[in-house]
Length: 98
Figure 1 (cartoon, helix red, strand yellow):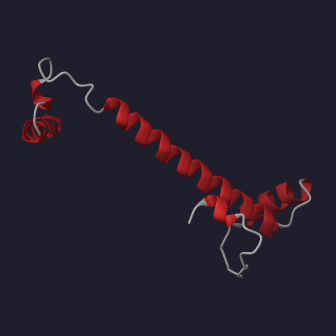
Figure 2: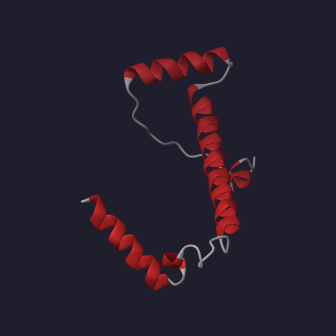
């Protein structure tokens, strides 16, 4: 389900229970009151924002991975030539850390 689908007004709501510390609840209530929102509305919006940020981070990491694919020069970095050589190189690096 995409975040956009979460904004669908035809989606039914369900009641749920979460546990907050007293100080966190007070802080969230204070912020919600300043915005004229209920505690539930404030938390819903925060969750949707978190989901959007997570989605964007995934997209950004995929873009970065796609930019890096094929950018390693195997002549200058022979340890990157094959999957086997990469595994051997990583294993060697890890043993050096111990």
